[in-house]
Length: 187
Image (cartoon, rainbow, N blue to C red; front, side):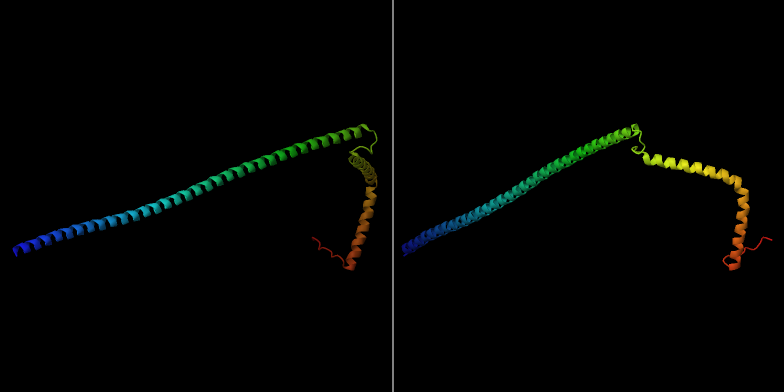
């Protein structure tokens, strides 16, 4: 009986050892399984993170490319604007030079016509004909006025009396009609 109990104990101990060994092995496998699961999840997270990094890098590169393209376009537009401005300035300069040439040629032509007219003895062809005619008329008018003044100086005393009488008669008539009023005397 003791033998059987010992055998049973031994069998029990062996079975317990096998059981606990298998339990330890099972626990190890569970840990390994969890480690594998964790590693798989971590790898997936790393892949997602790498994909996100790659996406961000591509977006950043796209923005940098867009900025560089915009800079190039600005440079090109600035160059075109400078070319247009330069062409406009050159056209203005050419137009100004052409205008100056035309003005000089017109002045030369006018001076040539003036020289021809001055050399021509006919007064009507002279470009200053209007001024000359005005001067002649003024000369005649002044000489006529001087003659009239000399004759007026001689006849002035007689006319003055006549004018005074005529003016006094006109004033009297106007007073009688009431068209004018007589100012009070200073006395």
